[in-house]
Amino acid sequence: MRIGLIAPPWLTVPPAGYGGTEAVVGLLARGLAELGHEVVLAAAAGSPSPVAQVPGSLPPEPRHLGRGQDELRHVLNAYAQLQGVDIIHDHTLAGPLLRLAGSGVPVVSTAHNAMSEGFLPIYTAVAKCASLVAISQHQRTTATGVAVSRVIHHGINAEEIPVGAGMGGYACFLGRMHPNKGVLTAIRVARRSGVPLRIAAKMQSAGEREYFREVIRPELGGSVEYLGELRAAEKFDLLGGALALLNPLQWDEPFGLVMVEAMATGTPVLSTTRGAAPEIVVNGITGFLRDTPKALAASLPECTGLDRRECRRATETTFGVDRMVRDHVAFYENCLAGTLVPRALPRL
Image 1 (cartoon, rainbow, N blue to C red):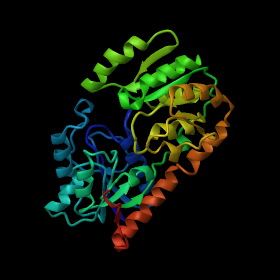
Image 2 (image 1 turned 45 degrees about the vertical axis):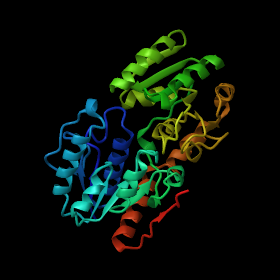
Image 3 (image 1 turned 90 degrees about the horizontal axis):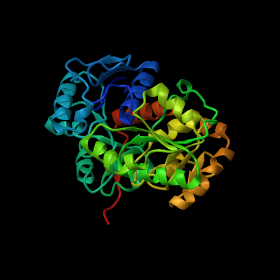
């Protein structure tokens, strides 16, 4: 197949630091190419992905993350450049709606956002002009009235991630500097359990900076340290040395790639039962799922007793990049053969 991939415009593919969607698109592009498919990528200009890329893309601008005019300019150029492909897989929010303007190429769209009240009407429209992929069963079950064609979990290339010994004597938090990621809860859990905490977080938007300044900075000091945003090698070094990843989600995250990345280093995950976490973490095997700060704090020391080999094994099988790529190839073939029957959950 000749496959066009469209990534969001604000970060490179793969990203230099934080960027779960861009990391997944980068792995998918490379994996498809290694299987012999011809891949053309529309991503931020200068992306280091080894596959062919469309001309005319905008340079990356993380400070504008989420700005609609950048996304629209990007996808208009992408669709114009990808008319000769067999199928387009669009990872932007607005891009698939361009099929309504007459694009004749079959389009697959992955929903990277939670099926919240704000996103449901958008994905309802997207599913009418593209074959929609959910990234977890939880996201699928919350997509009320949206015709979802397939659920495909993200995957990573564990071979490129070093295994750590988890002997650093600390827990870590990795994610965005946002209240719904649970960084404040992570601080309180770590202090309650007497375990040092190292925090690595993206902090680029005005809201993220304000949250850090007003809420998180006063909590720092002593055994709680903020490291900033880390590049890939630094991130995996942090994860590999930790006794656990503290990921006390305060929202229904549709996937949570950081949990899989932690497990790839051998580090178990301590999370709440929100969103897709129960699909990723096997309670008592690759981490613990608890829903109160008290229960999270009690379970944190117990993470040292888990088998780090089981964490790694899960990322080589259930959440491996080969599985993810094969699932997408089969899905593309179904789309082109016209054998899909998307189903929507009834509205309550």
